[in-house]
Image (cartoon, rainbow, N blue to C red; front, side, top):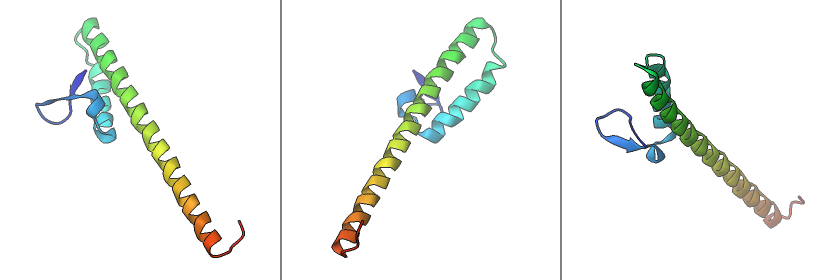
Length: 88
């Protein structure tokens, strides 16, 4: 599915950054209240669901990256302690 962020060029939902996805989600949710008819509302709900999934995926990746970074930092600290003969 493609959406529009700030310009006239469509962007695949999978290519949105977290900030862009949040902007699109807020805009789509606001537009849902002004849907022309039930078909328009259904289309907006599908877009909202897909963008929400993208946000969830990106936030999950961010959490996984943070855990990995923390693990690397911890390993570096342990290695430094071991090198300095500091007991763990």
